[in-house]
Image (tube, rainbow, N blue to C red; front, side, top):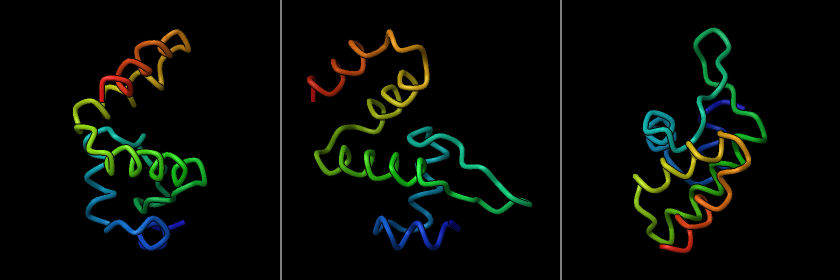
Length: 86
C-alpha cells in the first residue's frame, strides 16, 4: 500500500506517518523505486503505536519500546515496564 492509502486507513496524515518512521516509532518501510510500500505488518504496527499515542505515552518511551521490540525476546520485561509505567 502507498502512504496515501495507509494514511486514510489509519486516519493519520502522510506527514505524521513519515514523522513516526523518522523518529523510529515504526520500523523503516520498504521502498519500491523510492516510494514507500507498506505491508500489513506495517499497518498493524502503526495501529498499535496510534493506540499508545492516544493514551499519551511519550514519544521517547514509544521509541524505546520499538527498539526493544526488535531486539531479542528477553526484552519483554523491559517493554512491559514501559507500558506499566504509563
